Every structure is written in structure tokens, then in C-alpha cells.
Image 1 (cartoon, one colour):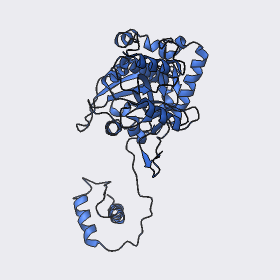
Image 2 (spheres, one colour):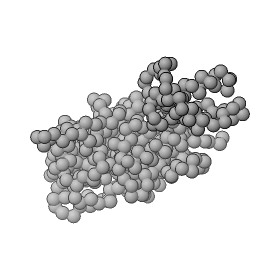
Image 3 (cartoon, one colour):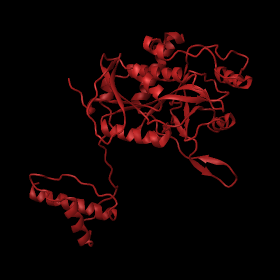
Length: 384
């Protein structure tokens, strides 16, 4: 069977090449490339992941943000082209790494899923809001929740994890132990920070509030469900990160830079913790944290029925119309209407019929809609 862009239903976005590499390793089968528009500058890897619940599979398309272009604007551009090229992407994931907050229970290598227990939005844009006169900042934006079918799959994963009892028996651990993954992303043997202060901060991150425990006491990644803070800045101030967490009732578990740009695409955000919100950034945990996030994403897809995905609405080929009734008493602007019709629908006849056209900001909404109404009325009369 020859596949086309319309046969792919799961979109997987990565911000960094290392995230992309580990995402590719999670595919059960890699597909050949398919033709896609020349004006789409994204790079894609196509493949499939098997669904254990039905014996079917999910066709997955993985893409990557351009080199040196981080942040929500770049993520939004990549997602826009992705859903335009692959119009039937019902499931959309943002999978990669994020920075943990000193003092939270989340450890380096752990997984944060943007799906709080109270069913509130899983991503907030912490730098979007109002600065008030008294010097306070009021955040005004949180992201849409992931689709219901993904939240149902998360519930199934939680149930499986409770049944497994021990972390090492969880499904995502088996994906981390695959030979190819272990070759690319072994767990770092140390925290990789040089100073005592930095090691103390990593210890607090790793064990919660008790820095006397070993920061490497637990060697298997845990999964946390909560709020992910997103913005356009790399956070190197631990006190700033803690303040944001306190403002959000301790629900914020990590910081990252892309999710805020994907609000319109209904993404579920899955992040592996690779670093701290402090000044001493390293790449030591990037590969392993990328692997843990990708492994959880794969487990999530394996419990998702392929039939459930097929029945979801896609983002491709959507349209929007002004919520107004067009008045049949529209008068005036005859010359403008004539000019627009001649240029927008030239030589439309039975051999080359024009079915649909769009006028955007030509003059005003009423004029644009009147041109469309007049043409469609004429089309019906002449049986075009």
C-alpha cells in the first residue's frame, strides 16, 4: 500500500536534534518519504507505532524546529506547515526536554506531562499578562487542554503504572532499555555540576526538600502530571522559577520555550527534565531526558486505540467565517464589487469552474461577503 500525507494521524514535534533522534528510535517501523509541498520547509521522518489495545498501528510523522530557532514563534510556524501538509493529524505531541525547578520533587531524567490531576490546562504562558501599577504581574494566558482521547489514554497509562507496582516494570522503562536507545542515551553517572552549591541544588531537585539524600538515589525515571510553564526566555534564576511555581499553587513542575506557540494545535506536552533553572547549564542530561520523554510518548500511543484516533476531527482544511448574517439589502460599491468579481473569478466557466474563493481584507467584511454571495448565486443560476 502506497501511503500519502493524508494517511498520517499522529504529529510529533521536537525542538532539538537530540530529541528528534530519540523520537525516531521509538518508531516500530520507518516509512519511505512521501511527496509534500515545496513551500513546506520542515524535515519529516515517517513511521508507525503499534497499538497494543487493538493490534493496529498509528502512522506517525516526526518533525524538528529549525536549527538555532527556539521559542514559541518557531514552534507555531513548524506546526502550521505540518498540519497543512498532513491534514489528518488528529493527535499532536510536543516531546522533548525542559528545566526543573529547585525544591520541586522532580528529579533529573524524570518525565513531566502537561496534564494536571484537576483537569486544568497543562501549559501556562508565564510571560503573557499585565504589569499593574503596584508592580505586580498578572498572568492572563493558559493553553488549551489536550484532546479528551489523549486524557483518556493518560488515565490508562496511570492505571498500568499502578498495576506494575515497581517503576522498572513500567512499559516506558522497557523502551529505554532497547539496545539502540541505550547506545544513544545512557543515564549520566553523576549530576555533572562542578560546585557544591550546584550539587546541593541538584540534590534538592532530585529528592524534594531533603538535600541530605543522594541526588542519584533513584536511578529510574518517574512520571509527574502537572503544569508546564512556557515562555520565550531561558530561565537561569532559580528564585524566579520558584516565584512562578508559588503563584501557580505549586503546580508548575518545569520550564520550557515552545509549548506556548502551539495553543491553536491542541498539543499534549511531554518533557524530560534535563537541567535546572539556574546559571550553570550543561548538556549532560539532554540525551537521557529526551529518551525518557520519547519513551513515555510511545507508551501513550500504544494504549491509544487506532480506531479512536481515526474518529477524531483533524486540524487540516478547516475554515472560519464571520458570525454574521449577510444582509440581502446590501447596496452601493457597485464598481468595487464589479472590479473584485472580474479579478477574483476570471473566466470561470463549465470547463474551468471556480467553486470557492476567499477575499481577505479587500475592503470590509460586508463587501467581501457580498462578492462571494453574488458569485455563488450566479453559479447556481447558470448551473456551474
